[in-house]
Length: 180
Image (cartoon, rainbow, N blue to C red):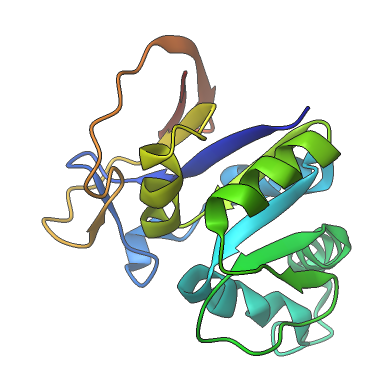
């Protein structure tokens, strides 16, 4: 049975904001995300984050520059990983992605039963919906040394009871906190 894991970068003041320059991963963290993507069973996305991540389906990032090696590695890992998208507005999704039906709870439970390993949850709004249903098994917080003062809260409208089970330093400035 798979575990549903919500993990994202978070500022010191608790926000997620992928448009903020401070959230761009340094090379060490980016390589960590490449390996994580290679090892994950798949990702369950909400519409917004899925549309942002579809960047990796295209080749805009690929400028035939040898320094693009890590970008290529991430794109290949992301393309290979199964993706499930929870959206009422999208009518179709890209390669290696499946648009889920309207019953999020039933779909998430089905994915947990049908797969092993970890299924990543993409996006705080989707994670909040799944947390309210009691379906999030772990939270992975990649704590970044920045105070943003705005953005979407990592814990968007939820207050789960959490227990710290692991910490891991990644590079010079990121700490991964794992809670159940």
